[in-house]
Length: 185
Image (cartoon, rainbow, N blue to C red; front, top):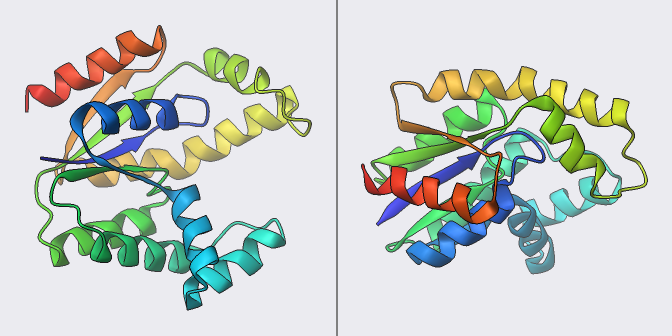
């Protein structure tokens, strides 16, 4: 049974790899986007707040995200393990997540950190064809991610096992690398 966090910059393939790993290891796939949509649909207090913020096009605050993740981790049957996709994104979220793991007695958490060079990420993100994606906006998003997320990996150092995986190449080969590295633990 594995408790995984998949981590990496926009365009690194987190969602794709999380789905593949979840399917192959029979893990519950916890995507932050899906958690937010479900909380909004369920009409929970946090869900209502999140929906209001998302409808405005703003980023959901750490407090609301942490609350939703806490609820999802606490109420789902995760005895077979899970892969958390898209959370944490900040040190504050990482600190809260470690507290939640401690409360729920989730030990032996593994962070799968997907890496890719900036040019590859820009190429992938630009190929998505989103109308608001310009090369400069994509590069800016990557730099913002780097500034906020590098400290998250630093925070996890020494607290959890971190697997750094090259996210460039064929999807199945990357997935094979992830599964092989997880199996070694």
